[in-house]
Length: 366
Image (cartoon, rainbow, N blue to C red; front, side, top):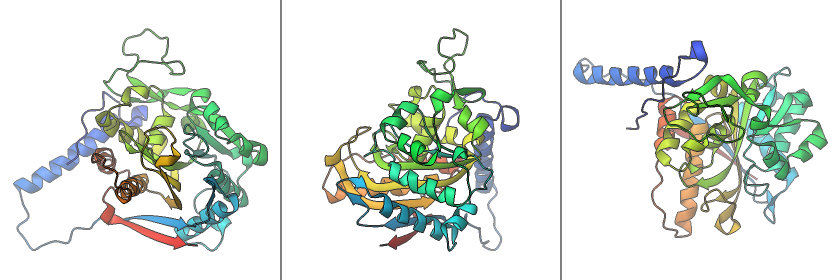
């Protein structure tokens, strides 16, 4: 059984909008109920225990989605549209988007741009999302493409979307962090430039990771788009890891150790500022990088030519991790087993489904 230790002295949701004690109380209550069942077992007729609905994921595969490792925008647009229409069970793209967002919403599209335009979230995938949102009546200025740093977005080519569609490009660190909304942990971080408490010499500085103002003050609907890229500690630089990493400051203290990430990433993603607006999760599976850590390496990559869509980040990450492991087996690459603790912890916090047997996968082929 996965376990989550105390995440620090965090006030409950209704006071501070932070996760710690409230999440711990939920886990503690669940454990008490399990213990009660062991002490006072049910001796009557066997009862049918309802199970949580399985996660649902739509996968669209197009063998012609890539050309010389570059995305073909027309093919990708069709893949994204098909996935969304199947996911929402609607007959047209605009109708699919209207099931997810309103015309008055401020839609934030969170990408993973640090690995660059080939290995990170590809601009062609985000362009397809933007086109659909515009078709549904969303204003360009109410669409924000964002990541941790604005410079990473620009270097990955996302500034072309601003020029073409008039959408907003924003960095979490460049926008600033909210002093009132944070994740707190006893683990002391070494603050760097851009962290809210950097340069402050006060007791307790370095124990909080503050949430970007993009999430606390602007975005009302959140879409997360991650690549399918192996990560040395998290297993995959997927939806949960990239969302947590990009949304808060003072995150470096959790990097480099799987156990730290396994606790911090789910708890950060469970903060209401992140979990409440989460509307859609997209995995850019055009390429699958199965080795190489945080660096983009073509010789450790396979063309998968897939777009995956759902609303369960845990299920999608677990499927990405399984695909990464499958690619390693196909190529005969020996690799230590990847811990599932991060995703099991996320399931305990009710962020999604970590059991592959409870994930329904609907595949559409071109």
